[in-house]
Length: 124
Image (cartoon, rainbow, N blue to C red):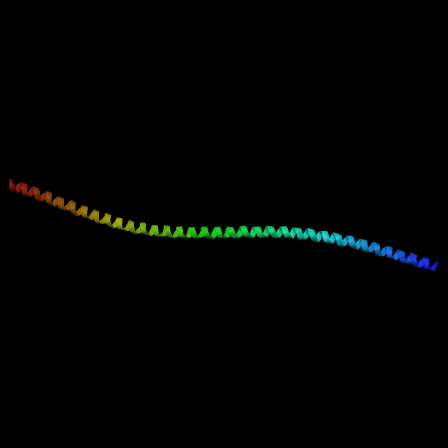
């Protein structure tokens, strides 16, 4: 009878222990599932960030190239503007010289015309 009582008690203890172990197993299994899901999410996130990083690097290179092209274009336009300014000054100076020359020729023409009239009057 005593042995039977001990065995019954031992059986209850083992049954309780088995129950605790079952609950612990379920908790660990659930935790493992959560960790697996989290790992999957992190892997996907890592992939997305890696792709985004590559896209940003490519975009950065494109912008750098565009910036270089715009700077070169700006230098070319600046040089062209300088050349046009010099050309404008030369044309302005040439225009002044031609205006002065035209004035001199007009005065000379007037003098020659007057001289011609005087000579014609004198010859008569």
